[in-house]
Length: 482
Image 1 (spheres, rainbow, N blue to C red):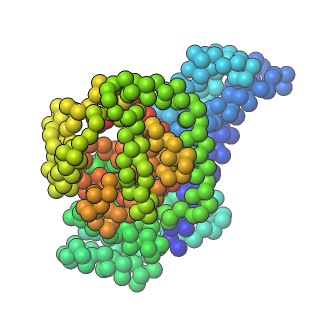
Image 2 (image 1 turned 45 degrees about the vertical axis):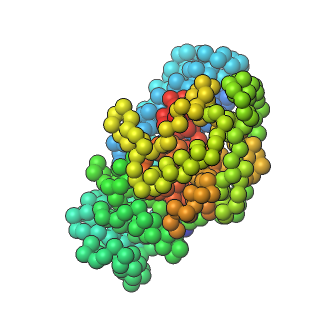
Image 3 (image 1 turned 135 degrees about the vertical axis):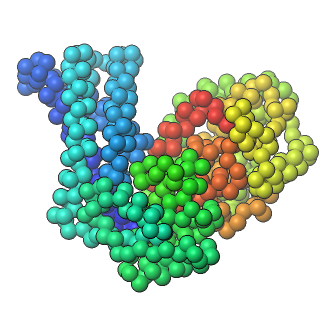
């Protein structure tokens, strides 16, 4: 299957890159200590090992957030250099804060300022040099020696678009070796509902194991149909559309300034991956409850004192496999009435029709019901920072929700969902997700649903980690929370 080959390529790149990263950090620490003290044989190894572990965890996590462990990074050296330099500076800042400001035990980390400076100077330059120049060729050599099966790629679109996309792929030494173009086809003259079948027939005739489509006319539903059919056949897909730029959610490594790329390269999660992520859910949700219990108690008391009504607002929502979920939030508004439910139904109908409720200070449409008159003083704070959602961490522990996933919908909203939009119900709902990080209340209904659709078909461990970490700035600055 094409998805197996593509996933295998990225696994190889991740393995070689991560091993190179942790080995390079160890080398730079040893070399810095040798330069600073003249020997490492008589030195205490504990601070060296502690520094190596701390930096390695920071770099591996940061690389996941910056999407630096996928083969696509080799197609854009400029962006790769920028993101790596940013990660290096953040890692330096993190180490200084962790060791010098928080003052963790000196015996566990290198505290000599001269040695630490040497570590980061050596690591920064070698990191940028080896990852940009050496790593792509090292991975290519490994792929050649292991005789991996190459990917047969079919380009779909007009000639100009195909030339632009082909040039991007050829920039990567890995893709130049692993990807073999088997042909191109242009179906722009056909009706949209006939293009998918035409591309699939051509892929079958030419033996293509991956498809790249450039289509500026396709709407979200058309793109979703392409994605679902390719997933059904086990064919990886890279789709180019200007819609992705409008979403502000696209793959930066393969995109252009005027048209964004969206890769759908992997198959659904295996049972093992589901179990592994369930363990992650359980561990981190349990830690969150322990750490945040004083905050949970403080919010509960504040909500109780803010006015009449329960501390928790519990609502029935639709979750995975169309099952019903008791969905708790800290109450942020005055007690609801029948009229408030009817107002929300009317708002959602307008939302589906693409009619914004208002505009923000920048003139952008805002697709959110204005209920500010009902929001309490405490509610205004916890809604802005999304702290009203914290009780849902208990749903993660129970297994009805996950840390990452689409938000569960209200039952009466289901009548507005089309078939492709219902793909969101094939995974667990989450505390955070693509919409929460990249969309919030600025997107119309179709675009917001497409973000959740993308999550379902792009889900990976690194993506989940990235979304969790990117949620914190959203909470901190309160974007779209009201």
